[in-house]
Image 1 (cartoon, helix red, strand yellow):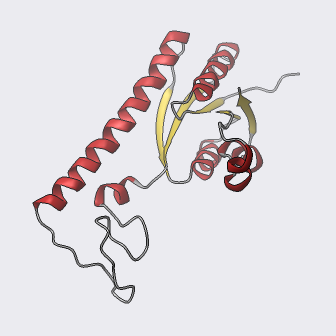
Image 2 (tube, one colour):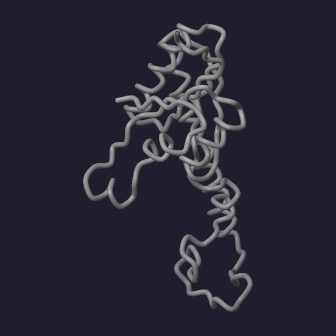
Length: 174
């Protein structure tokens, strides 16, 4: 007998394979109309860090100046230019997340299903698995990785990490 599904989680990163994941999620939602469908999008960096303009490399500020590692914080001219950069970064983050939400809702609308949309932060695999655990997800649907060869070997893929670490069933869409 087929298990009962109460919470379907679809990971969405705007790729073609993640659109296919939404298609699979919509199909399961139609088969289990009482189930909750949640599409999650993971922003890889903490929004607070991105908006504040933390240095991307230890020892160097965003503008390329060396920072003495013995200092507890880096010294920087907090002029209007720095504030503009921070505000622009925040706007870019906000626009990127709004675009992901819009694309996911557009795909769901075209398929005739409704669902929630959640934005997660941090490492994609950890965030998705953590969300599934916290919300008692029954299945995670994720698009297959577009990485191949050496890149996949060295970096791994989010879909394979989710498959190995998830607290529930995982369907990898292709």
